[in-house]
View 1 (cartoon, rainbow, N blue to C red):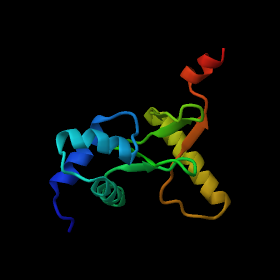
View 2 (view 1 turned 180 degrees about the vertical axis):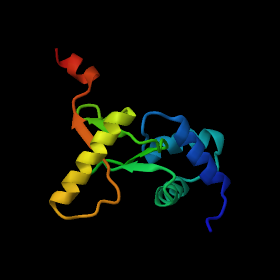
View 3 (view 1 turned 120 degrees about the vertical axis):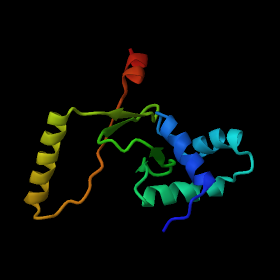
View 4 (view 1 turned 90 degrees about the horizontal axis):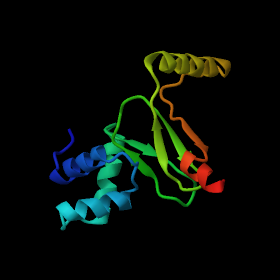
Length: 134
């Protein structure tokens, strides 16, 4: 059984309040304002535990960049801008979500595999960065 921790609860609550998919360092900068005695290693350790227990999502970015975290467990996709690295949520309605799940099952069938989970990270240029180029 997982031990209750005020630090872990605070980290989870701060993450759930954010909508910008922060790194551990970004979360740490928010958390030390509330709990000045917390260390960065504690934030990393607790994020790992929260991810392992399925309470948060981890978004692995390109090599050399810090992972991002998401406290929203509702089914959704992610889009990462390759210019500014911002990550946005893409929520599908129930019908589109069902279609996507059916397509993923078809892909698994093509290779005779059983898929137990999936993460979809779309990459490209966000609207803000596209407009800068004009």
